[in-house]
Image 1 (cartoon, rainbow, N blue to C red):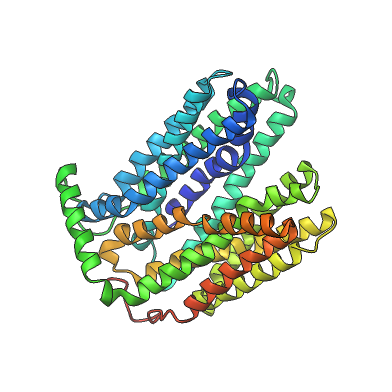
Image 2 (cartoon, rainbow, N blue to C red):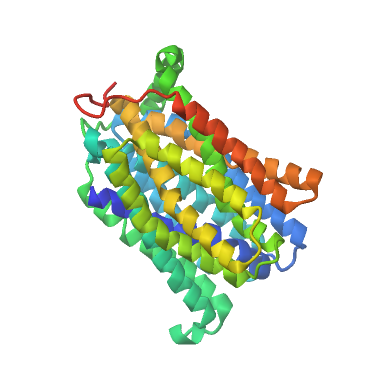
Length: 415
């Protein structure tokens, strides 16, 4: 269980330092020096979209393949190797080499996202049915603290490169990418050594696994009518996680549009990471003693209040309070959604079903930003645009309310 959870500690460093933190800024200021601001934004967006779309489309197929051959762990490690190597390769991309940097980044993002499909699916191999909420929350909790710790060190490296015997900020950022690769590789070792899939692991050829995987997908779609509750949950998840992802991705842009200093926003992001660590553990405890569904619904209500509150904030202190509120519920929504879904799906098809789960997660944060953009354009107010996200939380919560979950005791997840 701990070896599985520590993988979240490992790869969250990529999500915080590379994806959310340094790459977007460093791409514009260092690699894309020969491009206009609009051109660099286009290529960065294209690499993100391309990698996300590829994994979203392949995730169910890859999951079905892994289920057929008992390959979840091997496929996780394969994608992890790709992600680690590409992250380390960013260190080698020189100034002005924007095309090389964006290609390396795209393959790194594929490695990160692809590994997560199988990481999520492995939860059914490390947790008992009644402990899914606690184990899922543990993964997110250690991920927040692990990613936050290395990100804080990396920020310190860029602020004081002389402390680390580095020549300047640019060199500090390049070394930060290398530290992420080493961190990711090192903390993957416990999972590689101590996590084992249940059932027989076959040595079937990849083509045979792929052929069997496609057959399994066809069979799953054929039996959709018998999986009504799973698809109702997935639709609810798609809507409310779109709201969660939109808040996470648009918060900095929203804060800048209101005139807050970037240092305030970076501080708020770090606050959110470290508050989310104990909060995710607490949410897992509540999910076990109450219900995952109930905790998610309360968390979505809090998210809605945050959106309304954010439309009225005036001072930096307001932004800090909002960051704290998001940190309290963010991990709970993500962790308990994963454990609730794991409790509903057929255990022997975990990777396939988590392929669908991750596919929807990748397609999420599409409607939210679009709604915000349209609302801002039509109203002329950034403050009004944040209010439309409440619609996603409300619609997702309404559908989730009608999802029937399996009994917590005396019922397996094998379907």
